[in-house]
Image (cartoon, helix red, strand yellow):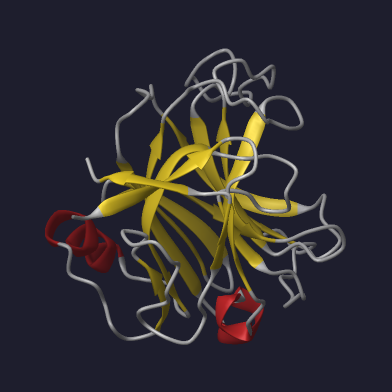
Length: 232
């Protein structure tokens, strides 16, 4: 029977050792794809003004990229000129940073979310822009500014958290990483038909078994404090 890994929002995460395969700076392009299911809309272990890093590669002085989701209780105001809502509640974003952090460029979408529903999220970056997709559709792109220069750092990649400062509560599965920026048509096919582009695929974590095996390469991950339930 297939199972899903459930992240408890307090301490569950997967850690994969650092690799140049996971760095936009060394490959010239990066795409990270995942199915994610938030089981709550207010996370028990948030940071900043009410967000959680649910997948990323970065820690103090070694920032590279991350996915972020804002909880329903966020106090972060929506950006001027963007009518999604008075706050960033439900916003999911993908950022690329300078190693020292603080400065980054990101793309996001902000839709009403329903706890317990699966969505497909893809973040991508090349040498000039970041991109984010929801359910196979490009939602936003953002051009780098001159002060943003991605660099390969030494941080491990983590799923369910980025740097152990906030934790996602829900399920994540089918995490895939490519060392290139996928075309919009490839992302659409991945979502609609499950067709996985093989060119540039450097890691694949299906997360429907009791270990975090990389079925596409040699970047196996270690699961900490996870539980497994029948797939839904």
